[in-house]
Amino acid sequence: MSSMSDLHQWIEDKISSGVVPIVTHKNGDMDTIASACALSQSIGQSSRPMGLHVSKVAREVIDELGYEFSRMDPNRVAMPRTTSGIIIVDSGGPEQIGFNLPEGIPICVIDHHAHTSNDWEISEEDIHINIGMCSTTQIIFEYIREYRIETLDVKMRKILLTGLITDTGHYRHADSNALNAASIMLGEDIKHGDVLDLLRTSGLGRSVRIATLRSLSKVEVEKAGDFVVAITSCSTHEGIVAGSLIHAGADASIVTNSKVEGIRLTTRASHRAVDNGLDMGHILSSLAESLGGQGGGHAGAAGWTTEVDRVEAISSILSRISAIR
Image 1 (cartoon, rainbow, N blue to C red):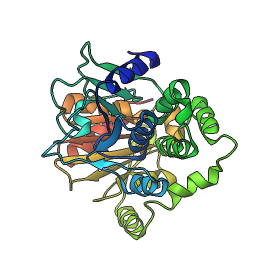
Image 2: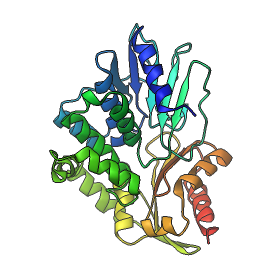
Image 3: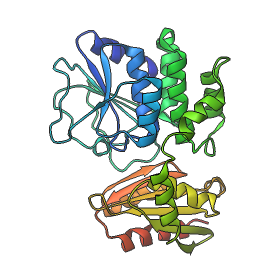
């Protein structure tokens, strides 16, 4: 794996000869969007954040903070004419960005996931930064602090913190490094409540409440080994629904969505379950490798998109959970 100094040298080399777009993964969650926006701001006019999708939460946060983000057409992928390199943030594999990258352009992958279902092909002109942190925004924050500290303003620190907060499940899965990074991001001039308000007022509208309540009305509860698993389905807001099942007392939750191509499964695990050996990221990445599709994530929050039917997919997950002692 490459180092922070390698990353800085790669960026300096590429912006000296052209533009460096920063590409997010196709789900457009807060961590990937915040990472792209903050890194792009630190680089300046030679960079821009772009991707296929921005989640509702992330869209309202970047609108509130005044960040611009370019939405891409997956059928007509357009990069700046003078693109000299492409940075991909928070993506465990090339399939996770949702489109094929142009050939012949060097890439830089910055990611924090321990479990992925496919690997990047890194040539001599490419670099891969993979550091075991709780969020990609932590990696971006460390890089900016070390090499572009003069760009680290209040706006940037706020958006970096939103990515850290959401990817740790509002600190439920945070470690000491994440909490220390959050403290430094806040500094003396940002109120933590103001950052939380950015997230609380986003994505919690009527449609979210309706989707959550409908999903909770058809929950199935299964015993998988030592763990209680809650299972349901919905057509939107799977992450919020999955989190609600954990808050309701489940050790793990599985939420399916068949409105996408194939089936998408979103999972969560409680902090207690993770402490007792449950790692949903490992389970879903291994299932993706054996049964097909894209899968992976964190121990407490992971996803899997596959062509396997719903019954087989859920049964496979429950079987893996049952094997944990």
